[in-house]
Image (cartoon, rainbow, N blue to C red):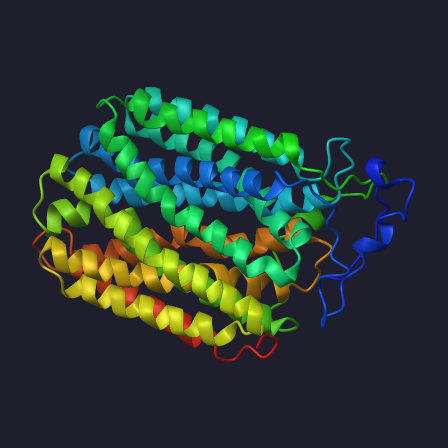
Length: 441
């Protein structure tokens, strides 16, 4: 991928220096002065974080709480296998849309800007999919609704992630990424508590998050001073297909960082997707108690990660060091997974999850900052960030490949011990993938 420069129309800055030069690839020694962002109002950062939180709340409350609950009603015998298939189909959809939309967004000449149409359009599509989930009366209807919702989430997430690379200077990027991570960590806890406190009706389970994702992203749509391009760039089917690809031989550091995030996310997805069933089938809680316990466990995950997220994102920005923090955080995540594997009661299991949260608090913020700085072409943030997004979208597709045979081991029902052991191995391999990276300190 080579950097390309396209004219930009900036109505608020026309009397001053044109912004076309700001699209040049920033020098590796100092990414702050040359990044293509525009001056933003004080409302931008809060609106950005709230949009990310609203989107994460909707997708995680649905994927980790509402859909498992609904499948327990629609297909109680095969709920674990059906959940794997549902997650896989959602993963395929979000992978199919994210990278091409990233490329289209990069070269968009919409008067609304390059990212704003995808922020609002994705939120609307997500709300439509969530509405379909609310009224689904069978498994195919549930899967179809989730596929539509995931397409919308893919568009919105692509745009929000691109803003991190093109509107946030590198000197504060880890701290803003930490806010992203804290939003993602807070979303499952809020989602679990929210769903458990709502009436036992899918209309509430899916309808309330749909409203939240619309409101949150509408706020960012209003306040964002987006980049506007005026020179059209041809987009072919070949270029869209290439949007999935960054040469791992030419850009080895980026490839290793991408592999690290893929493996670590696969490990976490193995636990988060099956969390409700781990509490019911492995720890012996009934459905009502497990739903309440899920909120407590996810709160422990988030609460434990807040301190490490704030501390290590600040430390990373202050020192410029990324690799040691990423490596150490992944190892701590693996230790937490091991404790959860050995747990046979809720207390020990929650301790393990808290250790995972501590590791992930540091990992999510610093790893994102490191990956954006290893992007081969910072002027094509939508495409590059969409490729990064594949590293945490693909685990939804890979999860059935790993989980199905592990859950089938033995004859005593789903083997969640084998599943957790697989998660530990994936996390360790993810940590090892950080070591060959040379382009980050």
